[in-house]
Image 1: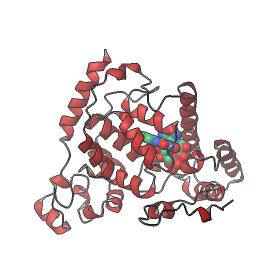
Image 2: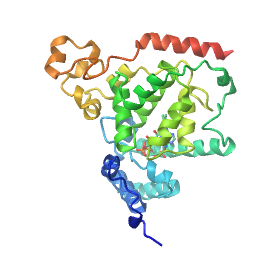
Image 3: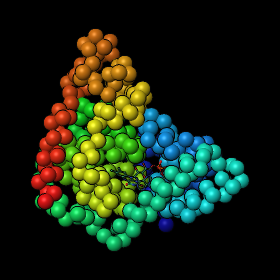
Length: 301
Ligand SMILES: Cc1cc2nc3c(=O)[nH]c(=O)nc-3n(C[C@H](O)[C@H](O)[C@H](O)COP(=O)(O)OP(=O)(O)OC[C@H]3O[C@@H](n4cnc5c(N)ncnc54)[C@H](O)[C@@H]3O)c2cc1C
């Protein structure tokens, strides 16, 4: 029998996996190391920092959990032991918040166990009548990080390059697809399923349904993440956007989440031509929000 390296499964031409190799060390050793690093260095400030995509504030244990390279119980006990011995950084609130996220994972698995078709069927059946639009071009622009909304585009490019996207940006990108673009949440779920290194049958399906409003314990239908204000709040200096959209890097902080509103001299100085070097926004954000509210009103009964 041939060994794994002999099977030469890794891509070479084209080598689309370079960004994934740089970001991850698959296997139990990589998982254990990630956990130790996180407990000793990353946990401090997790409760607030976990919402900041411009910082490296989360554990990145998700692909390891997904593939059983580490278990939630191991994480739970390792953290408890480290806190008792004083090896863990961070406050009780940081530890509580982190453990509660593991709890959300358990909840997703509970939902999947009782609803094996969670990735394909609306948990709330009223959504079976939802007037989705089927716009292939809008979907493609979202997938490629070319919507013209920097936070969404940065997330989609981070996903494509590394196979991972920050949780806050997952929520914003998913909300944008579902609510502003009115695309069926299943098209987004399928893209994440194909591209995430942590693509998880429970977490992915439950999270997409949560954002859509069709899930158990779903976000209310009127919660529509604004990609501009989300960017300004959670990536205030624009470091995350600059990292994943280098063509916007030269913009001043105040314009980084609204490049289409930047004055001509700022655009010129940054070498940006809207519609050429970076897309104009796919739609007016206020129009998209109102259209989504109207569509959701149709099924609320
Ligand atoms: C649209 C959408 C799709 C998602 N798809 C997936 C997916 O396919 N696989 C996946 O593991 N997570 C998914 N999530 C949840 C979350 O984004 C990731 O678990 C998290 O970003 C992983 O990074 P981390 O390990 O650094 O998280 P940390 O913040 O360090 O959290 C530790 C662990 O807790 C669990 N966790 C954290 N947040 C959540 C959450 N909101 N719901 C359930 N469990 C959570 C994960 O197992 C994670 O590894 C999705 C979220 C959204 C909004």
